[in-house]
Image 1: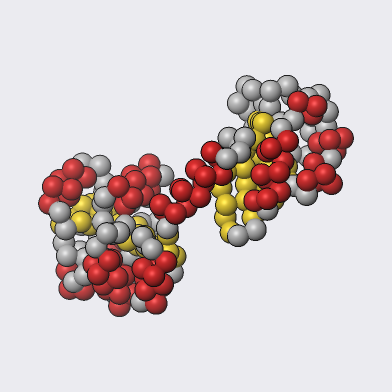
Image 2: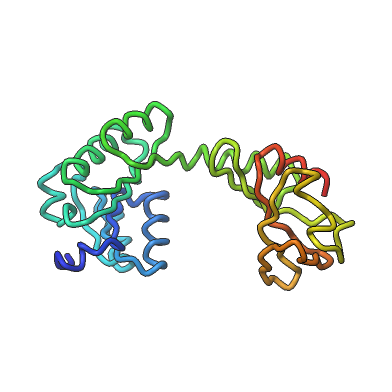
Length: 224
């Protein structure tokens, strides 16, 4: 285990449950140069992650004493990636709350599960399957290249620029007045990234990063 001084760093994160979701989160945090303490009750999974994370431990995450012995109370942030075992998921969040962690992110597999997690102390409830399903549905049924809905009423999408926009500035084509959208950036075919300004000219074959309501974004994508 790391020392108390290093674990008190806000950049360090506890990830409990190193399955498909938790493991991906832990690996992404590691690649972003955060120290990660990974915890799982399955010894085989712990062994798989032993040479990939800063610290990995086998433990019952519903046991306050076991978590305290691992120094979890010295962390500020935790991610609970336990999904299918709802009781373990809820009791783990409760244990983390009792240990005084400031920020707890928890995976939920249903709305009811999410409500329970929030009621026992989860600050952020994540529905990965539902979020991915929504995203894929938008991509399948439209011409969008990528789509992310942040809240009901706000989305960002990547879509092809209209053919008649080539060689014209954003001010000329007037997407805001026509579709109610905000163009965030232009991606020319060379892969560069141009932050959008009214005078930005759209090269042939470009993609646009646009923001607006889901309906506005879908209507624009259908017209490209």
